[in-house]
Image (cartoon, rainbow, N blue to C red; front, top):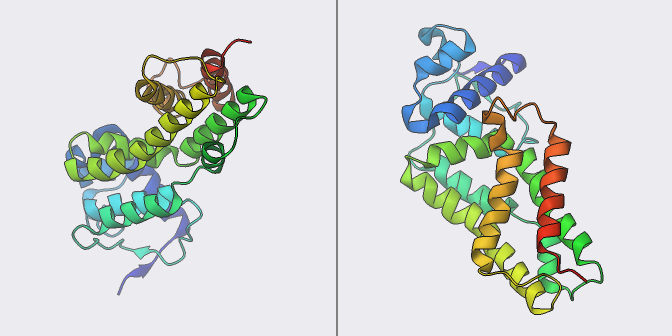
Length: 232
C-alpha cells in the first residue's frame, strides 16, 4: 500500500526533480541525479518515487497545473502507464492553452490604441510563461532528444501560439496599425522567443538571472511593442 505523502517532502521531491530535468533533460537524467539533488541515497529515493518516469510525470502534471491539489499524491509516486504522460500533456494543452486577449484581438476590429492592445497580448503571454516557468523549461530541454515529446510540446503548444500571433500580425498589418514586416511568420517566432528568453531562459545565465522578473518582462514587451506599432 502506498504511504501517505509528507507535504514538505513531496514539494522537495518535485523541486529536486524539476531542477535535474531542467538542466539535463529527460533522457540524460538518472534517478541518482535526483537523489543527489534531493540529498538522499538512491535507495531512499525509491521510497518516494518508483522510477524516473514517475518523477517526470509528477513534474509535468503538477508543474503545468500548479493549482492541482496534491492531497491525492501518495509516496512512492507510481510509474505511469506507457504513453500516459504525453497523453495527459496533450490533453492539458488542448484544455488550457487559451489566451483571451489574443483570441479577442483576432475577432475584434482594430482599436484606436493598438499599442495598448499589443501590450495586453504580450503581457498575457509572458504571465502564462512565468506561471508555468519551470515545467516549460523542463519540456523545452527534454524535447531536444525526445521526438515524441517535441511533437506534443513544439508541434502543439508552441505552434498554436505562433499561428495565432502570425494571424494577429497579418490582421493588424492589413489594417495599417502595425508596420509592414518582411515575414509575419518569422516575426511571430521572434516575439515568442524574445519573451521566452526573458521570462524563462535567462534564468540559466548567471549574468542575467538576477534581473527582476517585472523589469525583464516590462522591458522586453515595451521594446517589442515599439518595434511593431506603425509610426503616426
